[in-house]
Length: 496
Ligand SMILES: Cc1cc2nc3c(=O)[nH]c(=O)nc-3n(C[C@H](O)[C@H](O)[C@H](O)COP(=O)(O)OP(=O)(O)OC[C@H]3O[C@@H](n4cnc5c(N)ncnc54)[C@H](O)[C@@H]3O)c2cc1C
Image (cartoon, rainbow, N blue to C red; front, side, top):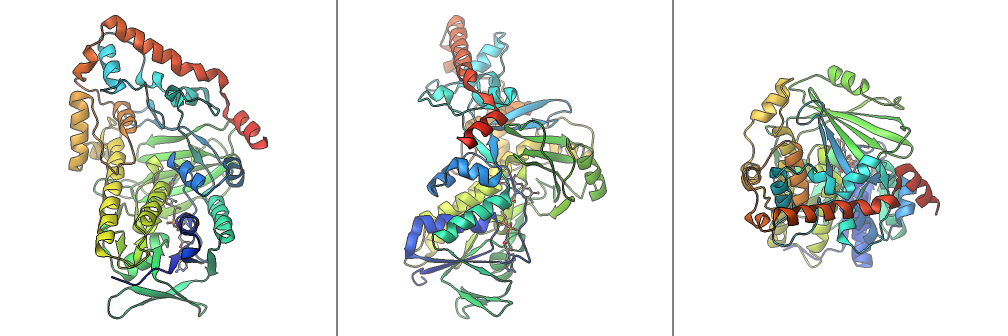
Protein backbone atom coordinates (compact mmCIF):
# COMPACT_ATOMS: atom_id res chain seq x y z
CA UNK A 1 0.00 0.00 0.00
CA UNK A 2 1.30 3.41 -1.03
CA UNK A 3 0.91 6.64 0.91
CA UNK A 4 -2.04 9.02 0.78
CA UNK A 5 -2.72 10.74 -2.53
CA UNK A 6 -2.20 14.46 -2.09
CA UNK A 7 -1.15 15.33 -5.59
CA UNK A 8 -2.26 14.00 -8.98
CA UNK A 9 -0.15 14.67 -12.05
CA UNK A 10 -1.82 14.44 -15.45
CA UNK A 11 0.66 13.91 -18.28
CA UNK A 12 -0.84 15.24 -21.52
CA UNK A 13 -3.42 17.88 -22.37
CA UNK A 14 -5.52 16.50 -25.21
CA UNK A 15 -9.21 15.72 -24.78
CA UNK A 16 -8.26 13.00 -22.29
CA UNK A 17 -6.00 15.23 -20.18
CA UNK A 18 -8.42 18.13 -19.87
CA UNK A 19 -11.50 15.97 -19.32
CA UNK A 20 -9.61 14.21 -16.54
CA UNK A 21 -8.38 17.44 -14.98
CA UNK A 22 -11.75 19.19 -15.09
CA UNK A 23 -13.75 16.31 -13.61
CA UNK A 24 -11.20 15.42 -10.95
CA UNK A 25 -11.04 18.98 -9.71
CA UNK A 26 -14.82 19.30 -9.71
CA UNK A 27 -15.31 16.11 -7.70
CA UNK A 28 -12.33 16.23 -5.35
CA UNK A 29 -12.14 19.99 -4.84
CA UNK A 30 -9.24 21.27 -2.77
CA UNK A 31 -8.43 17.89 -1.18
CA UNK A 32 -6.03 17.00 -3.98
CA UNK A 33 -3.66 19.20 -5.95
CA UNK A 34 -3.80 18.63 -9.69
CA UNK A 35 -1.04 19.57 -12.11
CA UNK A 36 -1.27 18.93 -15.85
CA UNK A 37 1.83 18.87 -18.05
CA UNK A 38 1.49 19.32 -21.80
CA UNK A 39 3.58 20.44 -24.69
CA UNK A 40 2.38 22.82 -27.37
CA UNK A 41 5.34 21.69 -29.51
CA UNK A 42 3.99 18.14 -29.53
CA UNK A 43 0.33 19.13 -29.84
CA UNK A 44 -2.74 16.90 -29.76
CA UNK A 45 -4.11 14.28 -32.12
CA UNK A 46 -6.81 16.83 -32.99
CA UNK A 47 -9.54 14.53 -34.31
CA UNK A 48 -12.59 13.11 -32.55
CA UNK A 49 -15.68 15.13 -33.06
CA UNK A 50 -18.64 12.81 -32.54
CA UNK A 51 -19.92 11.65 -29.16
CA UNK A 52 -22.62 9.55 -27.50
CA UNK A 53 -25.30 10.78 -25.05
CA UNK A 54 -23.49 10.29 -21.70
CA UNK A 55 -21.34 13.31 -22.61
CA UNK A 56 -24.35 15.38 -21.53
CA UNK A 57 -24.01 14.04 -17.99
CA UNK A 58 -20.29 14.78 -18.03
CA UNK A 59 -20.94 18.40 -19.00
CA UNK A 60 -23.78 18.72 -16.47
CA UNK A 61 -21.59 17.49 -13.63
CA UNK A 62 -19.07 20.17 -14.55
CA UNK A 63 -21.88 22.72 -14.44
CA UNK A 64 -21.47 23.55 -18.11
CA UNK A 65 -24.25 25.54 -19.72
CA UNK A 66 -25.30 23.72 -22.90
CA UNK A 67 -25.72 26.85 -24.98
CA UNK A 68 -22.32 28.21 -24.00
CA UNK A 69 -20.76 24.81 -24.69
CA UNK A 70 -22.33 24.59 -28.18
CA UNK A 71 -21.20 28.14 -28.98
CA UNK A 72 -17.66 27.60 -27.70
CA UNK A 73 -17.14 24.33 -29.59
CA UNK A 74 -19.14 25.05 -32.78
CA UNK A 75 -21.21 22.09 -31.69
CA UNK A 76 -24.30 20.54 -33.23
CA UNK A 77 -26.86 17.94 -32.14
CA UNK A 78 -26.32 14.26 -32.87
CA UNK A 79 -29.33 11.93 -32.79
CA UNK A 80 -27.85 8.93 -34.58
CA UNK A 81 -25.30 7.51 -36.96
CA UNK A 82 -26.45 6.69 -40.46
CA UNK A 83 -24.67 3.59 -41.79
CA UNK A 84 -24.59 3.63 -45.56
CA UNK A 85 -23.53 0.68 -47.75
CA UNK A 86 -22.55 -1.43 -44.76
CA UNK A 87 -24.62 -4.52 -45.51
CA UNK A 88 -24.64 -4.08 -49.27
CA UNK A 89 -23.92 -1.13 -51.53
CA UNK A 90 -26.87 1.22 -51.82
CA UNK A 91 -28.63 0.31 -48.55
CA UNK A 92 -28.57 2.25 -45.32
CA UNK A 93 -29.85 2.10 -41.77
CA UNK A 94 -29.68 4.27 -38.66
CA UNK A 95 -28.25 3.45 -35.27
CA UNK A 96 -30.15 6.03 -33.27
CA UNK A 97 -29.76 6.90 -29.61
CA UNK A 98 -33.48 6.30 -29.15
CA UNK A 99 -35.29 3.11 -28.34
CA UNK A 100 -37.76 1.93 -30.96
CA UNK A 101 -41.27 1.29 -29.65
CA UNK A 102 -42.52 1.46 -26.09
CA UNK A 103 -42.19 -0.37 -22.81
CA UNK A 104 -44.29 -3.52 -23.19
CA UNK A 105 -43.67 -5.04 -19.78
CA UNK A 106 -42.14 -8.51 -19.74
CA UNK A 107 -40.74 -8.71 -23.23
CA UNK A 108 -39.34 -6.03 -25.49
CA UNK A 109 -41.25 -4.22 -28.21
CA UNK A 110 -39.34 -5.92 -31.02
CA UNK A 111 -40.99 -9.28 -30.25
CA UNK A 112 -44.45 -7.81 -30.87
CA UNK A 113 -43.17 -6.12 -33.98
CA UNK A 114 -41.57 -9.38 -35.19
CA UNK A 115 -44.89 -11.18 -34.81
CA UNK A 116 -46.72 -8.37 -36.62
CA UNK A 117 -44.23 -8.57 -39.50
CA UNK A 118 -45.06 -12.26 -39.88
CA UNK A 119 -48.71 -11.28 -40.07
CA UNK A 120 -48.03 -8.89 -42.93
CA UNK A 121 -47.37 -5.65 -41.00
CA UNK A 122 -45.35 -3.21 -43.10
CA UNK A 123 -43.81 -0.61 -40.75
CA UNK A 124 -40.11 -0.98 -40.00
CA UNK A 125 -38.92 -1.02 -36.41
CA UNK A 126 -37.42 2.45 -36.92
CA UNK A 127 -40.87 3.82 -37.76
CA UNK A 128 -41.47 3.65 -34.00
CA UNK A 129 -38.39 5.66 -33.07
CA UNK A 130 -38.60 9.43 -32.61
CA UNK A 131 -34.85 9.92 -33.12
CA UNK A 132 -35.14 8.21 -36.50
CA UNK A 133 -38.17 10.28 -37.52
CA UNK A 134 -36.28 13.48 -36.69
CA UNK A 135 -33.23 12.27 -38.63
CA UNK A 136 -35.44 11.78 -41.69
CA UNK A 137 -36.78 15.31 -41.31
CA UNK A 138 -33.31 16.65 -40.40
CA UNK A 139 -34.94 18.35 -37.45
CA UNK A 140 -34.61 18.68 -33.70
CA UNK A 141 -36.12 20.44 -30.73
CA UNK A 142 -36.16 19.96 -27.00
CA UNK A 143 -39.29 18.07 -26.03
CA UNK A 144 -40.46 19.04 -22.57
CA UNK A 145 -42.47 16.05 -21.55
CA UNK A 146 -42.59 13.39 -18.85
CA UNK A 147 -43.91 10.93 -21.44
CA UNK A 148 -41.18 8.28 -21.99
CA UNK A 149 -42.60 7.80 -25.48
CA UNK A 150 -41.17 11.23 -26.36
CA UNK A 151 -37.67 10.54 -25.05
CA UNK A 152 -35.12 11.65 -27.59
CA UNK A 153 -31.60 10.99 -26.29
CA UNK A 154 -28.94 12.98 -28.09
CA UNK A 155 -25.23 13.68 -28.11
CA UNK A 156 -23.08 16.28 -29.85
CA UNK A 157 -20.71 16.82 -32.70
CA UNK A 158 -18.07 19.36 -31.71
CA UNK A 159 -14.60 20.65 -32.48
CA UNK A 160 -12.50 18.60 -30.07
CA UNK A 161 -9.63 21.11 -29.98
CA UNK A 162 -12.11 23.82 -28.95
CA UNK A 163 -13.66 21.47 -26.36
CA UNK A 164 -10.21 20.85 -24.87
CA UNK A 165 -9.57 24.59 -24.73
CA UNK A 166 -12.93 25.18 -23.08
CA UNK A 167 -12.31 22.49 -20.45
CA UNK A 168 -8.84 23.89 -19.85
CA UNK A 169 -10.36 27.28 -19.03
CA UNK A 170 -12.80 25.68 -16.56
CA UNK A 171 -10.13 23.49 -15.00
CA UNK A 172 -7.62 26.34 -14.55
CA UNK A 173 -10.32 28.57 -13.08
CA UNK A 174 -11.03 25.91 -10.48
CA UNK A 175 -7.39 25.51 -9.52
CA UNK A 176 -5.73 23.00 -11.85
CA UNK A 177 -2.12 24.04 -12.49
CA UNK A 178 -0.93 23.75 -16.10
CA UNK A 179 2.76 23.33 -16.84
CA UNK A 180 4.13 23.71 -20.34
CA UNK A 181 7.03 21.51 -21.34
CA UNK A 182 8.22 18.35 -22.99
CA UNK A 183 8.45 15.33 -20.70
CA UNK A 184 11.93 13.97 -21.25
CA UNK A 185 12.45 11.53 -18.46
CA UNK A 186 10.21 9.67 -16.04
CA UNK A 187 11.51 9.12 -12.52
CA UNK A 188 10.68 5.92 -10.62
CA UNK A 189 11.10 4.70 -7.08
CA UNK A 190 14.03 2.29 -7.19
CA UNK A 191 12.30 -0.17 -4.84
CA UNK A 192 8.73 -0.50 -5.99
CA UNK A 193 8.89 1.02 -9.48
CA UNK A 194 6.19 3.59 -8.68
CA UNK A 195 6.51 6.77 -10.69
CA UNK A 196 7.67 9.68 -8.57
CA UNK A 197 8.08 12.52 -11.02
CA UNK A 198 8.38 13.85 -14.56
CA UNK A 199 11.59 15.49 -15.67
CA UNK A 200 10.91 18.15 -18.33
CA UNK A 201 13.25 19.20 -21.11
CA UNK A 202 13.30 22.78 -19.74
CA UNK A 203 14.78 21.47 -16.50
CA UNK A 204 11.59 21.59 -14.41
CA UNK A 205 10.49 18.59 -12.36
CA UNK A 206 6.90 17.71 -11.60
CA UNK A 207 6.40 15.40 -8.65
CA UNK A 208 3.21 13.64 -7.56
CA UNK A 209 1.59 10.66 -5.83
CA UNK A 210 -0.73 9.45 -8.60
CA UNK A 211 -0.08 9.84 -12.33
CA UNK A 212 -2.67 9.82 -15.10
CA UNK A 213 -1.13 8.97 -18.46
CA UNK A 214 -2.93 11.07 -21.07
CA UNK A 215 0.02 11.23 -23.47
CA UNK A 216 -2.00 9.79 -26.36
CA UNK A 217 -0.49 7.19 -28.64
CA UNK A 218 2.95 7.91 -27.18
CA UNK A 219 1.76 6.25 -23.95
CA UNK A 220 4.85 7.49 -22.12
CA UNK A 221 4.03 6.31 -18.61
CA UNK A 222 2.02 3.08 -18.67
CA UNK A 223 3.45 1.46 -21.79
CA UNK A 224 6.88 3.04 -22.27
CA UNK A 225 7.93 3.28 -18.62
CA UNK A 226 5.99 0.57 -16.77
CA UNK A 227 6.22 -1.69 -19.79
CA UNK A 228 2.59 -2.76 -19.78
CA UNK A 229 1.81 -4.90 -22.81
CA UNK A 230 -0.61 -4.01 -25.56
CA UNK A 231 -3.21 -6.58 -26.68
CA UNK A 232 -3.46 -6.40 -30.45
CA UNK A 233 -7.00 -6.80 -31.82
CA UNK A 234 -6.13 -6.26 -35.46
CA UNK A 235 -7.20 -9.82 -36.37
CA UNK A 236 -10.77 -8.62 -35.75
CA UNK A 237 -10.36 -4.96 -36.61
CA UNK A 238 -7.57 -4.72 -39.21
CA UNK A 239 -7.95 -0.99 -39.93
CA UNK A 240 -4.70 0.71 -38.94
CA UNK A 241 -4.89 4.06 -40.70
CA UNK A 242 -7.11 7.09 -41.00
CA UNK A 243 -6.95 10.18 -43.21
CA UNK A 244 -8.80 13.23 -41.90
CA UNK A 245 -9.69 16.44 -43.70
CA UNK A 246 -11.92 19.35 -42.83
CA UNK A 247 -14.22 20.89 -45.42
CA UNK A 248 -16.42 23.96 -45.72
CA UNK A 249 -19.76 23.61 -44.04
CA UNK A 250 -22.66 22.13 -46.01
CA UNK A 251 -25.77 24.10 -46.65
CA UNK A 252 -27.70 22.08 -44.12
CA UNK A 253 -26.44 20.76 -40.80
CA UNK A 254 -27.58 17.17 -40.40
CA UNK A 255 -28.47 16.01 -36.86
CA UNK A 256 -26.52 12.79 -37.34
CA UNK A 257 -23.08 11.43 -38.26
CA UNK A 258 -22.72 9.67 -41.60
CA UNK A 259 -20.64 6.50 -41.83
CA UNK A 260 -20.25 5.46 -45.44
CA UNK A 261 -18.72 2.09 -46.29
CA UNK A 262 -16.46 1.97 -49.35
CA UNK A 263 -14.78 -0.91 -51.09
CA UNK A 264 -11.80 -0.78 -48.73
CA UNK A 265 -12.97 0.90 -45.53
CA UNK A 266 -15.38 3.56 -44.41
CA UNK A 267 -15.70 7.29 -44.38
CA UNK A 268 -17.11 9.62 -41.74
CA UNK A 269 -18.87 12.93 -42.21
CA UNK A 270 -19.45 15.03 -39.12
CA UNK A 271 -21.37 18.30 -39.37
CA UNK A 272 -20.25 21.23 -37.21
CA UNK A 273 -21.63 24.76 -37.42
CA UNK A 274 -18.53 26.27 -39.06
CA UNK A 275 -17.18 23.32 -41.07
CA UNK A 276 -17.43 19.59 -41.56
CA UNK A 277 -15.13 16.85 -40.34
CA UNK A 278 -14.41 14.08 -42.82
CA UNK A 279 -12.11 11.12 -42.88
CA UNK A 280 -11.56 7.62 -44.07
CA UNK A 281 -10.56 4.58 -42.01
CA UNK A 282 -8.81 1.69 -43.77
CA UNK A 283 -6.34 -1.12 -43.42
CA UNK A 284 -2.90 -0.93 -45.03
CA UNK A 285 -3.22 -4.70 -45.54
CA UNK A 286 -5.94 -4.08 -48.13
CA UNK A 287 -5.15 -0.72 -49.70
CA UNK A 288 -2.56 2.05 -49.74
CA UNK A 289 -2.67 5.68 -48.63
CA UNK A 290 -2.92 7.04 -52.18
CA UNK A 291 -6.00 4.97 -52.97
CA UNK A 292 -7.65 5.84 -49.65
CA UNK A 293 -6.96 9.53 -50.21
CA UNK A 294 -8.43 9.33 -53.72
CA UNK A 295 -11.63 7.76 -52.33
CA UNK A 296 -11.85 10.31 -49.52
CA UNK A 297 -11.32 13.35 -51.73
CA UNK A 298 -13.72 12.16 -54.40
CA UNK A 299 -16.45 11.70 -51.80
CA UNK A 300 -16.49 15.12 -50.17
CA UNK A 301 -19.53 17.34 -50.46
CA UNK A 302 -17.66 20.61 -50.06
CA UNK A 303 -14.18 22.06 -50.56
CA UNK A 304 -11.35 21.04 -48.19
CA UNK A 305 -10.16 23.82 -45.88
CA UNK A 306 -6.94 22.12 -44.78
CA UNK A 307 -4.51 19.42 -45.83
CA UNK A 308 -5.27 15.75 -45.42
CA UNK A 309 -3.77 14.47 -42.16
CA UNK A 310 -2.78 10.83 -41.65
CA UNK A 311 -3.10 9.03 -38.30
CA UNK A 312 -1.76 5.49 -37.85
CA UNK A 313 -2.96 3.25 -35.04
CA UNK A 314 -3.09 -0.29 -33.76
CA UNK A 315 -6.48 -1.50 -32.56
CA UNK A 316 -6.36 -2.96 -29.09
CA UNK A 317 -5.85 -2.04 -25.48
CA UNK A 318 -3.24 -2.27 -22.77
CA UNK A 319 -3.49 -5.51 -20.76
CA UNK A 320 -4.00 -3.34 -17.69
CA UNK A 321 -5.15 0.25 -17.66
CA UNK A 322 -3.90 0.80 -14.10
CA UNK A 323 -0.51 -0.40 -12.85
CA UNK A 324 1.29 0.77 -9.69
CA UNK A 325 0.40 4.48 -9.40
CA UNK A 326 -0.33 5.06 -13.10
CA UNK A 327 -3.69 5.01 -14.84
CA UNK A 328 -3.84 5.37 -18.62
CA UNK A 329 -6.77 7.41 -19.92
CA UNK A 330 -7.48 8.14 -23.58
CA UNK A 331 -5.42 6.90 -26.50
CA UNK A 332 -2.59 5.82 -24.19
CA UNK A 333 -4.94 3.07 -22.90
CA UNK A 334 -5.93 1.66 -26.28
CA UNK A 335 -7.52 2.43 -29.59
CA UNK A 336 -10.85 1.51 -31.14
CA UNK A 337 -11.70 3.00 -34.49
CA UNK A 338 -14.25 5.82 -34.32
CA UNK A 339 -17.11 3.88 -35.97
CA UNK A 340 -19.40 4.29 -32.94
CA UNK A 341 -17.80 7.45 -31.52
CA UNK A 342 -16.69 5.70 -28.35
CA UNK A 343 -13.21 7.04 -27.52
CA UNK A 344 -14.31 10.23 -25.80
CA UNK A 345 -16.83 8.16 -23.87
CA UNK A 346 -14.06 5.76 -22.82
CA UNK A 347 -12.19 8.76 -21.42
CA UNK A 348 -15.29 9.82 -19.50
CA UNK A 349 -15.96 6.39 -18.06
CA UNK A 350 -12.28 5.85 -17.15
CA UNK A 351 -12.21 9.10 -15.16
CA UNK A 352 -15.55 8.35 -13.51
CA UNK A 353 -14.30 4.86 -12.58
CA UNK A 354 -11.07 6.30 -11.19
CA UNK A 355 -12.98 8.85 -9.15
CA UNK A 356 -15.36 6.23 -7.79
CA UNK A 357 -12.40 4.15 -6.66
CA UNK A 358 -10.18 7.11 -5.80
CA UNK A 359 -7.47 5.80 -3.44
CA UNK A 360 -7.29 8.87 -1.24
CA UNK A 361 -5.55 7.00 1.60
CA UNK A 362 -3.29 4.82 -0.50
CA UNK A 363 -3.44 2.49 -3.49
CA UNK A 364 -4.40 -1.14 -2.87
CA UNK A 365 -4.11 -4.05 -5.29
CA UNK A 366 -7.81 -4.90 -4.92
CA UNK A 367 -8.79 -1.43 -6.16
CA UNK A 368 -6.38 -1.72 -9.09
CA UNK A 369 -7.79 -5.16 -9.98
CA UNK A 370 -11.39 -3.97 -9.84
CA UNK A 371 -10.59 -1.01 -12.05
CA UNK A 372 -8.80 -3.22 -14.56
CA UNK A 373 -11.55 -5.85 -14.68
CA UNK A 374 -14.27 -3.29 -15.36
CA UNK A 375 -12.32 -1.49 -18.03
CA UNK A 376 -11.44 -4.78 -19.73
CA UNK A 377 -15.10 -5.75 -20.13
CA UNK A 378 -16.02 -2.25 -21.24
CA UNK A 379 -13.33 -2.20 -23.94
CA UNK A 380 -14.17 -5.72 -25.11
CA UNK A 381 -17.91 -5.12 -25.44
CA UNK A 382 -17.28 -2.00 -27.53
CA UNK A 383 -14.82 -3.98 -29.65
CA UNK A 384 -17.47 -6.66 -30.22
CA UNK A 385 -20.08 -4.08 -31.16
CA UNK A 386 -17.73 -2.59 -33.77
CA UNK A 387 -16.77 -6.04 -35.10
CA UNK A 388 -20.49 -6.81 -35.53
CA UNK A 389 -20.86 -4.04 -38.14
CA UNK A 390 -18.00 -5.44 -40.20
CA UNK A 391 -18.69 -9.11 -39.77
CA UNK A 392 -22.36 -9.16 -40.75
CA UNK A 393 -21.90 -7.75 -44.24
CA UNK A 394 -22.89 -9.12 -47.59
CA UNK A 395 -20.53 -7.10 -49.75
CA UNK A 396 -18.53 -9.03 -52.31
CA UNK A 397 -16.66 -6.17 -53.94
CA UNK A 398 -13.30 -6.66 -52.22
CA UNK A 399 -11.22 -9.13 -50.22
CA UNK A 400 -11.56 -6.76 -47.30
CA UNK A 401 -15.32 -7.24 -46.88
CA UNK A 402 -15.20 -10.95 -47.72
CA UNK A 403 -12.46 -11.53 -45.13
CA UNK A 404 -14.38 -9.55 -42.53
CA UNK A 405 -17.43 -11.72 -43.11
CA UNK A 406 -15.47 -14.96 -42.90
CA UNK A 407 -13.31 -14.13 -39.90
CA UNK A 408 -13.50 -15.98 -36.63
CA UNK A 409 -15.20 -13.58 -34.23
CA UNK A 410 -14.90 -13.33 -30.41
CA UNK A 411 -17.06 -15.91 -28.57
CA UNK A 412 -19.11 -13.34 -26.70
CA UNK A 413 -20.12 -11.72 -29.99
CA UNK A 414 -20.88 -15.07 -31.61
CA UNK A 415 -23.22 -15.89 -28.70
CA UNK A 416 -24.95 -12.54 -29.00
CA UNK A 417 -25.56 -13.04 -32.71
CA UNK A 418 -26.82 -16.60 -32.16
CA UNK A 419 -29.25 -15.56 -29.43
CA UNK A 420 -30.64 -12.73 -31.53
CA UNK A 421 -30.86 -14.85 -34.70
CA UNK A 422 -32.75 -17.59 -32.93
CA UNK A 423 -35.11 -15.82 -30.51
CA UNK A 424 -34.82 -12.09 -31.26
CA UNK A 425 -33.34 -11.33 -27.86
CA UNK A 426 -30.28 -9.57 -26.56
CA UNK A 427 -28.35 -10.09 -23.36
CA UNK A 428 -26.41 -7.30 -21.78
CA UNK A 429 -23.02 -7.27 -20.16
CA UNK A 430 -22.98 -5.04 -17.11
CA UNK A 431 -20.28 -2.77 -18.45
CA UNK A 432 -21.49 -2.66 -22.03
CA UNK A 433 -22.20 0.97 -22.82
CA UNK A 434 -24.46 -0.08 -25.69
CA UNK A 435 -27.84 -1.25 -24.47
CA UNK A 436 -30.38 -3.53 -26.17
CA UNK A 437 -31.74 -0.86 -28.50
CA UNK A 438 -28.29 -0.27 -30.00
CA UNK A 439 -27.50 -3.94 -30.60
CA UNK A 440 -31.00 -4.44 -31.97
CA UNK A 441 -30.71 -1.67 -34.53
CA UNK A 442 -27.29 -2.74 -35.77
CA UNK A 443 -28.22 -6.44 -35.93
CA UNK A 444 -31.42 -5.71 -37.86
CA UNK A 445 -29.76 -3.01 -39.94
CA UNK A 446 -26.99 -5.40 -40.97
CA UNK A 447 -29.64 -7.88 -42.05
CA UNK A 448 -29.95 -10.43 -39.22
CA UNK A 449 -33.57 -11.60 -39.13
CA UNK A 450 -34.53 -13.53 -35.97
CA UNK A 451 -36.13 -16.91 -36.64
CA UNK A 452 -38.49 -16.57 -33.70
CA UNK A 453 -39.80 -14.15 -31.10
CA UNK A 454 -40.86 -14.42 -27.46
CA UNK A 455 -44.14 -16.36 -26.88
CA UNK A 456 -45.51 -13.49 -24.77
CA UNK A 457 -45.98 -11.63 -28.04
CA UNK A 458 -48.58 -14.24 -29.05
CA UNK A 459 -50.90 -13.34 -26.18
CA UNK A 460 -52.75 -10.38 -27.76
CA UNK A 461 -55.16 -11.13 -30.60
CA UNK A 462 -54.08 -9.92 -34.04
CA UNK A 463 -56.52 -7.05 -33.71
CA UNK A 464 -55.15 -6.02 -30.30
CA UNK A 465 -51.60 -6.25 -31.60
CA UNK A 466 -52.42 -4.04 -34.58
CA UNK A 467 -54.13 -1.50 -32.34
CA UNK A 468 -51.17 -1.36 -29.94
CA UNK A 469 -48.66 -0.89 -32.73
CA UNK A 470 -50.83 1.79 -34.34
CA UNK A 471 -51.10 3.61 -31.03
CA UNK A 472 -47.31 3.66 -30.60
CA UNK A 473 -46.86 4.64 -34.25
CA UNK A 474 -49.17 7.65 -33.83
CA UNK A 475 -47.76 8.64 -30.44
CA UNK A 476 -44.19 8.74 -31.78
CA UNK A 477 -45.30 11.27 -34.40
CA UNK A 478 -46.97 13.68 -31.99
CA UNK A 479 -43.82 15.67 -31.11
CA UNK A 480 -42.85 16.08 -34.78
CA UNK A 481 -45.01 19.20 -35.17
CA UNK A 482 -42.79 20.91 -32.56
CA UNK A 483 -39.53 20.09 -34.32
CA UNK A 484 -37.48 22.68 -36.19
CA UNK A 485 -34.96 22.23 -38.97
CA UNK A 486 -31.69 21.56 -37.13
CA UNK A 487 -30.06 24.85 -38.27
CA UNK A 488 -33.13 26.81 -37.23
CA UNK A 489 -33.10 25.11 -33.83
CA UNK A 490 -29.42 25.99 -33.32
CA UNK A 491 -29.98 29.58 -34.42
CA UNK A 492 -32.92 30.12 -32.06
CA UNK A 493 -31.49 28.15 -29.15
CA UNK A 494 -28.06 29.75 -29.25
CA UNK A 495 -29.41 33.28 -29.52
CA UNK A 496 -31.91 32.84 -26.67
C1 LIG B 1 -9.03 9.31 -37.00
C2 LIG B 1 -9.62 9.40 -35.64
C3 LIG B 1 -10.94 9.81 -35.50
C4 LIG B 1 -11.51 9.87 -34.23
N1 LIG B 1 -12.82 10.22 -34.10
C5 LIG B 1 -13.41 10.17 -32.88
C6 LIG B 1 -14.77 10.48 -32.70
O1 LIG B 1 -15.48 10.84 -33.63
N2 LIG B 1 -15.28 10.38 -31.45
C7 LIG B 1 -14.54 10.00 -30.38
O2 LIG B 1 -15.07 9.87 -29.29
N3 LIG B 1 -13.22 9.78 -30.52
C8 LIG B 1 -12.65 9.84 -31.73
N4 LIG B 1 -11.31 9.59 -31.85
C9 LIG B 1 -10.49 9.42 -30.66
C10 LIG B 1 -10.17 10.80 -30.05
O3 LIG B 1 -9.52 11.60 -30.99
C11 LIG B 1 -9.31 10.64 -28.82
O4 LIG B 1 -9.91 9.75 -27.93
C12 LIG B 1 -9.15 11.95 -28.09
O5 LIG B 1 -8.69 12.95 -28.95
C13 LIG B 1 -8.22 11.81 -26.93
O6 LIG B 1 -6.90 11.84 -27.30
P1 LIG B 1 -5.80 11.91 -26.16
O7 LIG B 1 -6.07 13.08 -25.30
O8 LIG B 1 -5.71 10.58 -25.52
O9 LIG B 1 -4.47 12.11 -26.98
P2 LIG B 1 -3.86 13.44 -27.67
O10 LIG B 1 -4.89 14.35 -28.18
O11 LIG B 1 -2.84 12.97 -28.65
O12 LIG B 1 -3.14 14.19 -26.49
C14 LIG B 1 -1.88 13.76 -26.02
C15 LIG B 1 -1.30 14.85 -25.14
O13 LIG B 1 -0.09 14.40 -24.59
C16 LIG B 1 0.90 15.40 -24.76
N5 LIG B 1 2.21 14.77 -24.84
C17 LIG B 1 2.57 13.65 -25.50
N6 LIG B 1 3.89 13.41 -25.33
C18 LIG B 1 4.35 14.39 -24.51
C19 LIG B 1 5.62 14.71 -23.97
N7 LIG B 1 6.73 14.00 -24.22
N8 LIG B 1 5.72 15.81 -23.19
C20 LIG B 1 4.63 16.58 -22.92
N9 LIG B 1 3.41 16.33 -23.40
C21 LIG B 1 3.27 15.25 -24.20
C22 LIG B 1 0.51 16.09 -26.05
O14 LIG B 1 1.09 17.37 -26.13
C23 LIG B 1 -0.99 16.16 -25.87
O15 LIG B 1 -1.33 17.26 -25.07
C24 LIG B 1 -10.73 9.54 -33.10
C25 LIG B 1 -9.39 9.18 -33.25
C26 LIG B 1 -8.84 9.10 -34.51
C27 LIG B 1 -7.40 8.72 -34.65
